[in-house]
Image 1 (cartoon, rainbow, N blue to C red):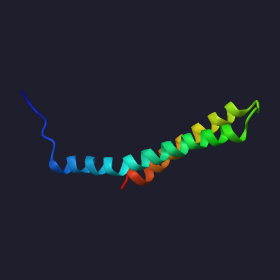
Image 2: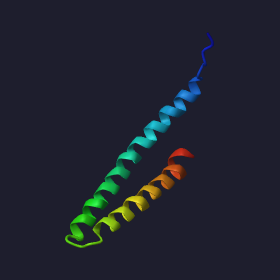
Image 3: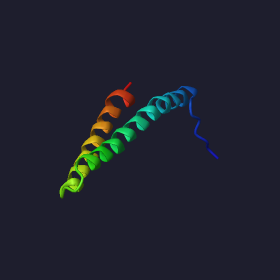
Image 4: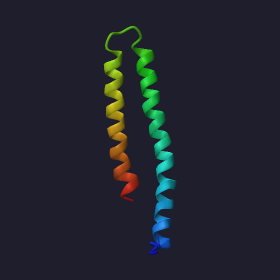
Length: 75
């Protein structure tokens, strides 16, 4: 049987990635869900609340992915 040996340096890089990405992931979830709740609170009884919430969700998700790629993955 052939086993793949993972170097210690690769394991360290993945640990560092997890240390960097977990706080960013938690903050981005708070921003997305908090924004959705604020939109729901501010636009009570409006007919376009759902559309605005979907727009916020998609835009904030894409922005968080871009920031994640630029500042967490590439470092």
